[in-house]
Structure formats: C-alpha cells, structure tokens
Amino acid sequence: MALVLSDEVAASRRLRSDNDPFGLGGGVRFGHALLRRVDFSFAGRDVTAEVAYQGGGDYAVRVGDGGRTFSARGALERGDDGEGVGARTELVCAVDGVVSRQGVLVHEDRVRLFTADCGAMDFRLRLPKFVRAAGAAGAGGAGGASADAAVAPMPGTVEAVPVAAGDAVRKGDSLAVMIAMKMEYVLRAARDGEVERVAHGPGDAVKKGTPIVLLKKQQQE
Image (tube, rainbow, N blue to C red; front, side, top):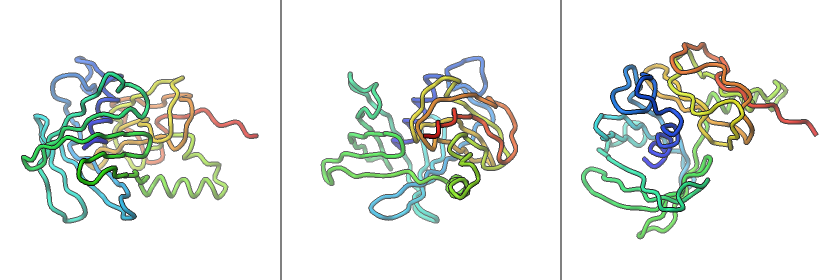
C-alpha cells in the first residue's frame, strides 16, 4: 500500500489535469487499469502482491498466488520535512477494518516499514522478468539499452508519463505507466540519470519493445 500510494502522490504532482482523461485530477479516468502487480523481496523470500482499486479509496490486496484477499484503505501523511528524497512519512492503513499507523520510508527500489511490534522491516522491489532479461542481454553485449530507456514490455497503451526532458531521475523512479492486458505496469529507471526525451505520451498505443522514455547515455570513462 505504501508503494502504490507513494507512486500516486508522485505522479499527481505532475499530472493534475481536470481536462485530461489520463490525468490524475478529480473525477473518473476512463480506461484506467484497476489492477496492479507488485513484486518484492522480504526476509529472503520473493513475494508477489496484486492490488486492485475498488473505487472510493478502497483496495483489494492479494498476497501470493492463490493467497487470501484483504480489504484495505490507506493514506500517507507527511510531516513538515516530508518533501525530500527518502523522507519518512506515516502510513495510516485499515486492513479488514483493523486500523494501524506505521512510519514508512520509500526510496528508489526499497521500502522500510517501522512498526512498534517488529521494529524496522525492509522490502526491496524486484524488477519484472522482462526487465531482468533485457538487462542480462545488455550486459552480454547488446548495448545495455534497457538501462537507457523505459521500454514497453508488451503491446499496450501509455497511461501516464510523470517525467519530462531534462528531469533528473534516480534508480527506481517511475518513468512511465502503461496498461497492458488489463493490468497497470510501472516502468522504472534502471539507473540514475537525466531524461533525454519522452518518445510517447498518455493515450499512445505502443508495441512490445517500444522505447517510451529515453535517458541520456552515460559517458564512457
């Protein structure tokens, strides 16, 4: 929940528009994907969670294949110093009606949750299989293209692009959001860098392998 809410806050800062059907302003976004898949590692185990938006601020969260589905609501509350990179916030969450409050820090591909009972717990996002495969191919001599662009993993529609040319991004930052096979995919930066060009915007239909956001190539030393 912390990751999903954090991404929504970050995207809404750039994409608020009451006239754009793909914006994150008030009202309904027609064609908006209601299901998001989050892959992460925790305590040495790989875990997959599916978060389905139910409307009205309600979510259905299923952890693991065939696992139990929880009803959840949540909000992030920032303190006065909560605008910086890696700033700690408070996650107020109700799961199956049980309300809790935890400190949470979302930074790049890591999420740290602070609880009164268990102390600090660390979660790390896992890159989707198509990104890991592309990265391995790049390391093997394919030019490392996956590190320089957010690439469509399959045919779909670009839903949002929360960056613009010239923006500085950090590893793990959201570069684009697209809808494919009725699911929402967040394409994240594989490295720190600067956005060189946004090749496709909200509403564009793209084929598999199409670069959506390109980063400036790193200088070879």
